[in-house]
Length: 556
Image (cartoon, rainbow, N blue to C red; front, side, top):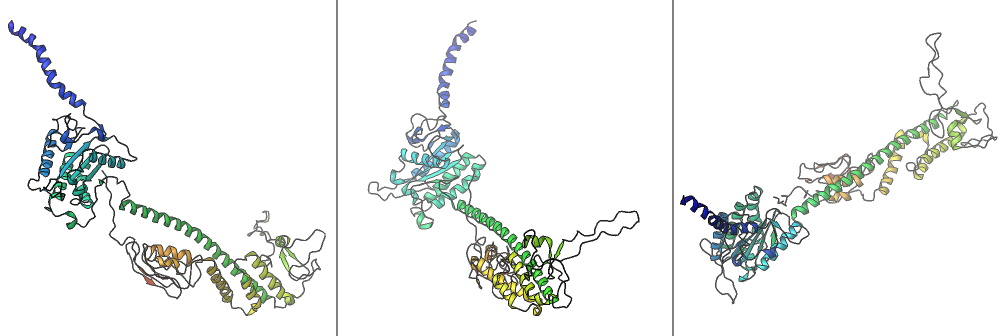
């Protein structure tokens, strides 16, 4: 009976002892900090409150790791501490380094310090700024700039996904920015797999090797990369724009510029199509006027077209005869013709054209707008041979009034001074071609008979100044040379090129362009020659897409 009583009596003592032995551990676990500020983290070699190692032991003079969030296990922390202690003591394979200062003539060892937090609690506009400020603050508060600056701080924030390396003045000459980037490149794959200990072990080992591999020979004498003097090196989002960011911005601006040019080219193409359609229409009307002039020399000449609109004066359509006796008359096979007004002088007009272009007050007899005859009424038409010159001049003027941008005063003067019945049909087109060439020279601000030399990002940007205006610009953007489309007027056979300047495939030119050559966008194709003269060529190779392609992105 004494044994049960003894057990019951000793139970409170055992419970009290257990609580007393576990209380410090629970207390330390409660002190594990998820969000940490740099002021909360003491130097690990001076930590007496177990802040840097809440789940392990208090700090010691040989400790170089501060992990207030408890990200590493005790075994992993001990392994990394051994590595950092070897580096600091200069034990093989690591070495000491000369301080080069009279205050400390003896060789010293590099101090590698590791700071880990789960989440940062510090000011900064962005996470990168916050990490940069955090690392600088720790470096200063831990006095790592002492000891001749033979110190390196590796700062890591898990949830913020930021990694910084801060180097002292002496360490910078042995471990520069180029080598820091190499360390990052080896750590990132492990961090992406959430292998924190493996990443830190690789990173610290690489840093230690870089600091000791030269045995007193500074890294600047071996590696020509510029050192980063006493500055933190952000990994995942640099505080300043990287070359990769700059290249992405350039590519975006290039494609935006190309999109704007494509829109402008689309508008210009529609305008050119409209003008070409109008020119063909004017050319047909001029041929009608010529045929009317030639027909007016016949004795029994009767006008067949309206002097205002130059359309046919066709008789009204009659209903088609029904196929059955009792059937209703069928509808006309064509729309009814426009009513015709025929004056006593013999000239005839569409009723609507006459009323619109030559209105007459009610109650008065209209005069003829062609020959100015004031007789009015309808009678047997006289011989119109005598007034064919007036008819021709009137028709030319009415057409020029409708299309002044095509039939300019110079063209009208040429048409009026020539004898229409001696025209070859191609002469009218020649007049229009000459006028289009003059108009093109006025409208296209950049453009000449010959293109300039090329070169630059787009493989022949000299074509910008080549003949062909906007089309030359588009052609030079995508091709090696400057040969482009023929400006705003696609049917002009002189100057520029008949094709889009070898779009996407180096510089090829068209019917009358010069030459275009180069390697645009990686150099897919060579260049070609044109058939005729004029036209803008432009040389140069395509820098854009022909290089190695720089820049790199880092992410986690």
